[in-house]
Image (cartoon, rainbow, N blue to C red; front, side, top):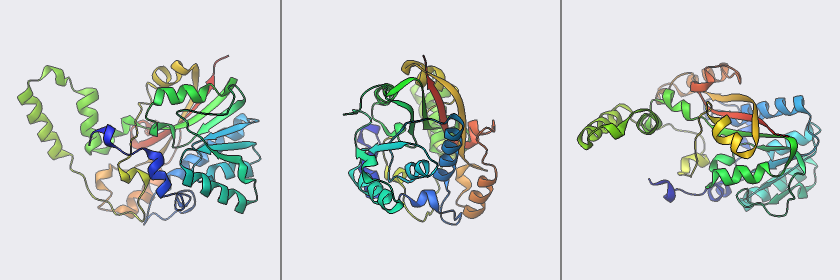
Length: 291
């Protein structure tokens, strides 16, 4: 489907708001993989090292990470564009004993009511890659940082396509590696058809549908070019990349041994393993605003 016809993520997130928190709490490899939990662990580890004073959580969802940051002693507030997520986050905050007004509704692509330069740390876990205008969103967010402030965010790993052996591999080969402009139209068609036969999709049964099963708009990034293509244009510099959501084998095999596929993947989770460049489907970027 043409990407323009894909659903905006905030619309879909609203439909899963009440269920979303389970991705941070449940660890049952028969049902799903706790990727969000690993991402949160990376975030908390980074925050404990840099010790920021004032944090903004962009795309805070139903508030589970925000609450974990509060429990760790950080001064944090957040916003989300999905009204249902904001409502759920406020419920979760109240239940956890924190003020509901720590979360409000705002749009990361058109941020209103927040003055520039007032945060020394901004986090965006599982949010910026859903933006329709990624570059504008990154610029908007970085403008809220003071000089030397940290921006910690997650991205989807484009290089994982080299390991996945599915439709994403085909797309990566076709658009990023192969010199298709040199081939005749007939040759292009033959190659594409042959590769399509190689990368057949397998249906995997999961306990509950995620937003990404709903054909939402999202983008992927190459960790090798994040510094030049994502950070530099926003006057940011990299302080580290941390990989998560490892796959012990290509996803096309998940349907064969789903529980063992997930349990063995968990055993190789390592944020700084070089294999994460290819075997992890996502990564966290720790960046700093230049003085």
